[in-house]
Every structure is written in structure tokens, then in C-alpha cells.
Length: 53
Image (cartoon, rainbow, N blue to C red; front, side, top):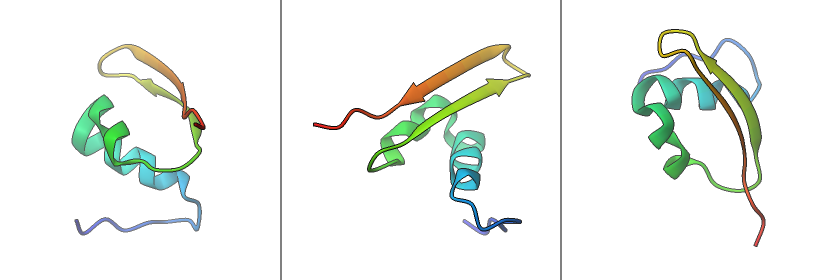
């Protein structure tokens, strides 16, 4: 997609996915994860974590 990452952290992936797909970005994430995200433009706060089955 042409994104340039400025760190070696995988947390940047979530930010880029959210920019492109909003909350639908969750369908592109695999494995265990947790994150908190504040969307200033929409005034929405997300606190999410995956469930291990």
C-alpha cells in the first residue's frame, strides 16, 4: 500500500489499517493483540483485544 513506517513497532500497522478501513480494520488482524485508539475526528474511543480460542 506504499506506507512508510517510522519505527520497528508493529503498532504502526494498526494505525495505518485504521486510517484506511476504520474499525473494519479488525478483519485484517490475526493473532493475539490489544490496543486502545482515540479517533479525534469522530470523537470515538476504542479499547479492543482479541480473544484466544
